[in-house]
Amino acid sequence: MTTQQSERTRPHDEAAADDGSHPARAEGKPGDWRGWRPGLKDKLLSAACWATGVSWIVPMTSVMTAAHYLVGAEKIDGLSRVFCHGMVKTATMSRWEAHVHPAVRDDEQYVFAQNHINHFDFVSMYPATPHFKQGIELASHFDYPVYGWFMKSRGTIPVPAERSERLAAVEQGMRDEVARGHSILAFPEGTRTLNGRVGPFRSGIFVAARNLGLKVVPTTVTGMYTAMRKGSLVIRPFQKIDVWIDEPVDFAGVSDEELPAKIDEVRNAIVARVDHYLDSLEAT
Image (tube, rainbow, N blue to C red; front, side, top):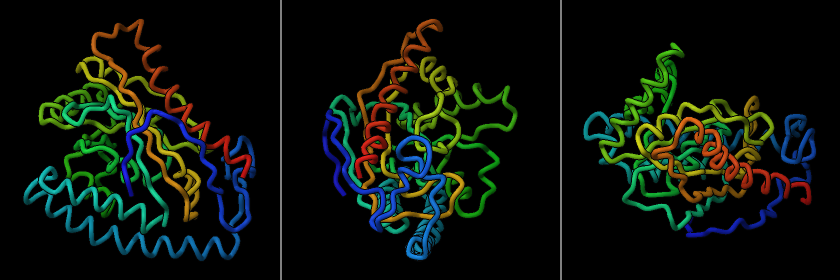
């Protein structure tokens, strides 16, 4: 697993499946595999991924949750990166690589705005840069066993159930994290993709970034939708997972009138990466 400095979009020619099937052609645009039905081999491979993934996540998050309360999440950030790399490896058996734009500084706080794919979003992106990144999560999710307890223990910013309270609560949470020297990891689509493509962006996170004078980094993960999609428990191993950290977009001083164009700038960068990858599956 390596991190490379790169500004170029390279082609992705890895097959979507190593068993001769083509979920990319199942329905809709290339990459949409909702109509694909797994065979016996696929089910066995998926079961193996679940077994190795669970054997990694349960002991690791248990230890880390306790450590968060004892010494703080910052003190064990190195272990967090080991956990994330291990989660991608054990649960998807995939190769991972990060491509970071040279304009992204290690000593600056950002909002990393990432495309929303599946339950591996946090772990697939987190090790790509050295920043401590605090996530944003519905407060109700903190009640989930293992995952919820883990996210709450590391200080994840809670989103209230009441919609009218969300923007103010999230902005204050972001302000507190930035004051600690942390960056923010957010998913502006607000929901996981069904077809692999990037959905509409909600504006809240960008309003908060503007109010706090932060830069937003377009962050794209490709290959992970091919590994697992929303609505399916099947994991398709042996993918190539790429994380693209593109040039930051400055939201400081942006007016309400300028805000939609700035949001589009971030979204367009992510869409270009995702569409390039998924469209390339048509040729495999």
